[in-house]
Image 1 (tube, rainbow, N blue to C red):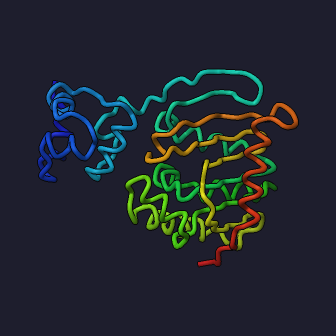
Image 2 (cartoon, rainbow, N blue to C red; image 1 turned 135 degrees about the horizontal axis):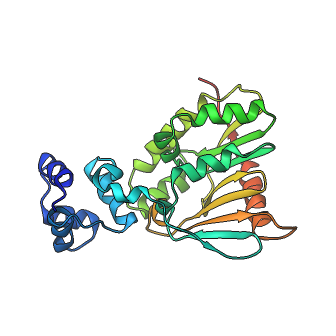
Length: 247
């Protein structure tokens, strides 16, 4: 059964099998199978294609809504996901909802959270009102490290604009008791999403967008473990940050 949604979007945008294959770095026969046989590409490829087409990935391939099972391990490492695209946004939201003491977010942009969960700012306000300290660090769009990341990921100036969009979203929280927002210009080796004693760590891979890189779910099990390593990394970057002004 053909994927009529994908066919319609490609036709409207003037895409051929060959041009979309080149943009997605796959074989044209793969694109033909997506369209004519309704085959579903790997999650990271699907995200890349959807971004190129300017279309919601789940509208093109609804089967991708189902998150993949993670592998349980030991100590601080609770689970490992091969790609951030495998982790449902609801998992990030549920993590933050559980926080009672501390929420730390270290990213360059991560606008996927606001895009997929428009109530994110309300959630952060609610957590702060309940006594959690909420610290958000986003990338400084004018920093050389952010601009270099855009070149490495073949994202060009797109990452700079996404940093500005992220700052615009979080700037609305400035002045809320218990919440602080800063920009940073560090080289971002990992994005960190912490809620009390748990966190998601999104590794970064040279030449790949964050959604295509692994995520590990950590839970603090004692002193000096993986969790503490990334918590200390957040604190170090936070110390270099510059406070963001209000709206």
